[in-house]
Length: 316
Image 1 (cartoon, rainbow, N blue to C red):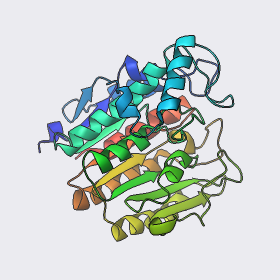
Image 2 (image 1 turned 180 degrees about the vertical axis):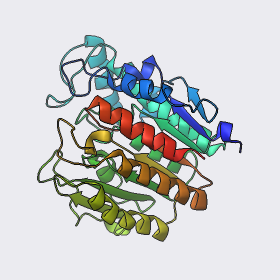
Image 3 (image 1 turned 90 degrees about the horizontal axis):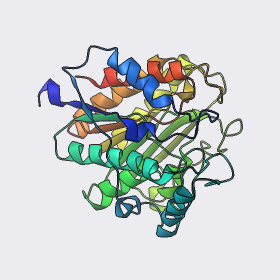
């Protein structure tokens, strides 16, 4: 595959529309902060761009319950209220915006599976808190979960790796697949005793047939790159023990120092390291197939720095 076609980034107003207003941490400038930094790079000959794509209701319901999806439709038409206990407000068009996050991730997945691409990045995505039947933590639809269901059921994969370096535990993904041995889960996050959602203890390693296929590494507040680098080999060891056919990376920028709602102290070096090592692992086991999803991050400079570092690390 040529260098020109190996990497794609999804950008556009459809993704930028997924935000909860200027008074909310998940505000309207997150997409543009990354886009502006991305456009400042000289990657035009190495990275394709693609417009956002909206998922159908049937596609969303691969992971979410019909009743919950209908509730989001109703709240979207009303244009007010809350989709959870207050963190995730409804707004006019929230259904379409959330469906576009899912659709863009699914479109990238299909292109990776067809070998049209090796790697892709969707900055406004990685909404890892939403459960099958409810919103949570700024996340309306769980695009990660939808992609995993599509890979298992539409593409017939038997081993999918999900790696999450967001400061918050990816509880919506973990508990949805806690007993599924086909989903290899690794999550480095700020200790749940000090940060939402309060889950992801080291003792949570999967249930039933999936016991041992899940890795949770709680990190103390203030942990920096050195602590990350010490912990990271555990992630690679898990993935080498269960070689994946596809890798998802949720690379939330809220684990960098200076985020307003977390207490981690990474630099973009941790994100670059994770992306680069997973790219190499994907080349060995997955025909290169790696989908990176932006996740959290509420300091605009950190978003720009971390996500451009991820894209650069994923280039050939």
